[in-house]
Length: 78
Image 1 (tube, rainbow, N blue to C red):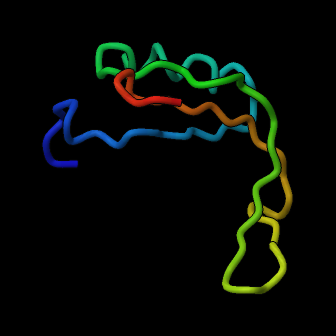
Image 2: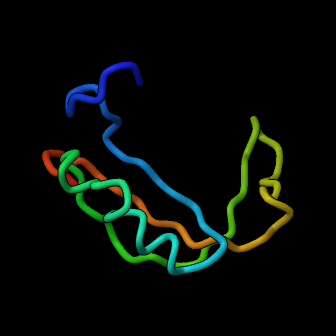
């Protein structure tokens, strides 16, 4: 992103972390509120998979669980 204005930012940003605390602190560390974001949902561990075409889903990150936190722009409906 060349320009850091609110209109150039994506609607949602999801951050992954191996531990809960870094995921929880990311909102404040990056000043997400000042950038027009709020936290969406809870910070929980998740397993990530990818589907390509009609193939069965395949584990990402060797099936390791990551804490995921999603930030959504405040003017975007959930």
